[in-house]
Every structure is written in C-alpha cells, then in structure tokens.
Length: 338
Image 1 (cartoon, one colour):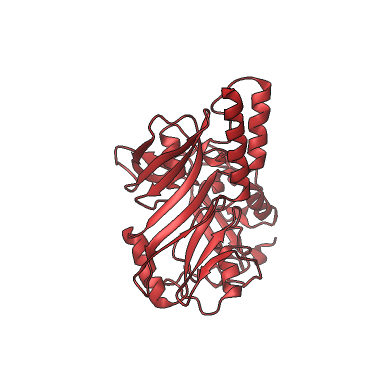
Image 2: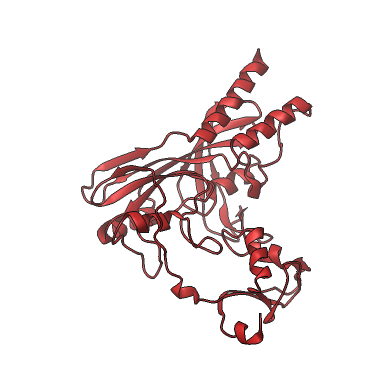
C-alpha cells in the first residue's frame, strides 16, 4: 500500500501502549482491546496493510513496545459504515405490536463490531423488520440489551420508540427478572448463595472482565444462584442477575473457583476437576466437542409489558448442544454411583 493510498484511509481504532508495556505481538495486543476481534481477523487486517504502528504498516508479528501508537485504518469512514440488512433466519418465540422475543443461537454476534460487520442479529432484524427504533446515535435498531456471542437464549427487541424507552429503563433500573442456566466446573458447596464483587475490565487482558472484591475498581455486581443438579465434577446452576455487567456470570463463577464449562476466555476449557484416567479425559474432551462454547443459556425474561403494564414471562428450553452435554454428565454421574 502506497503512502498516497494510506492517506485516503480512515482511522477506526487507535491505542497507545502504556508506559512499561512489555514487548507483545500486535495481534495479541489488539485482541486485548477490541471486542469480538479474533486473531485471524486481525492478522488478515495486518496482511492487507490496515494495521499501523506509529503511522507505518506492520506485520502481525510486530512487537508493540512502550509508547507505540497502534491504529487500524480502512477505506471507509467508521461512522458511515452502513448497517446491511441480511436475510438471516431468526427464531421468534413471541411478537406483538410493541416487542418481540428472539431466541438467539450460540455463535451469533448481537450487533456489528470489529470484524463482524455482517451476519449479526441486528443485520437480521434490519431485514425482517422496518422502522425499528434506535437508541441515540447507535446503529442497533430495536436492541434493548445483549448477550454474548457464544451464549444462547432469549432477548427482547423493541418495535417502537415508546417500547424502546420503557424497556431500556427497565434494564437500567433492573425492574425485571432474568434467569440463566449454566454448567460450571466443580461441586459447589452451597445449594444457593449470592456472589458479590465489583466487575471491571481485567487489568491484564482487556477482552475479559475481572472481579475486584475490595471495590477499588469496576462496578457493583450481584449474582444469585441455586443448584439445579449435581454431577460430581460439574454442577448445573440457575442464575438470577441483580445487576447486568458484561460477562457477569462468567466472571463471578471464575472468581469463586467454578468457571463455566468450556469457557475458553475464563479458563473453563481445561479439565479442572475429576480423575487422571485416560478414559475420563476422553469423556471430557467429547463433552467439549458436544458443547463447543461456554455452557451458558439465557433461560427466561419476566417484566411488565411496556403497553399493557401486565406481567409477561418468556422462557426458552436448553438448546440441543447444552441438553446433550447435561445428559452426558448425568449418565456419567449415574454410572459412577453404580
């Protein structure tokens, strides 16, 4: 890419390495800062000359040092990156004039971001529905809240401005009930309990969240849980969110020593409990293949309808991958007791 071509590029991201930054590959450096980024997408951007360090294009193997200015540039302005309606099938569990309930599959990103400008839930909504409301300048029509890419389950979508305002306020004020089902590593001691501790961006890895129990950083977070079923080396729990922080359930259970099963970002993709027998290791590896993402499902939403003010409740059964995973552990646990 020539200097003239680079002068016509538009900056989408800009980061400066902090003082004392140890040398780190630029692809790994950027993954710490950009949501939904993958190493493959960043390496592709570098190969295309879209990653600059101190205004010069670098390869993905470049080692970022203290004080380096790292930017990502493209041929189009960031703010004019249009939302492209796409004919992506949606599982809609309920719809009326004011809202709809979408049952999101694991693997679908909720809204566009770096490396995910298409194929998202919002792209699908823009195709299937006209004139969905937008919050402020965000190009996320209908979106009131979100769940992680690899979390499945129910989401409420607003269909008009009034519903958007009322539903957004309910989420901000926690005037609703949200239940999740998770499979976590280990045999949790208490049948029910409350996990507390501020949650904020990890100081070591900006892509994940950490718990700061002393409250010196992050925002207040409260997760209540109860045990649904015990399988010895893993436990199925139901979680109720009293607050709504990014990765709240994943970070809180990691904090108490029970990461979600197969949660790669929080250490749950290793065999954390059990025996050293080869047969057991093979069993767990098969479980990882059965549910190839964190075992977390947004089970239900309950709130007062924005138009009628009547209490409404929507729920979703475990998706096939989590259902099969639970069955595998249930059978294993029963066989161990025989």
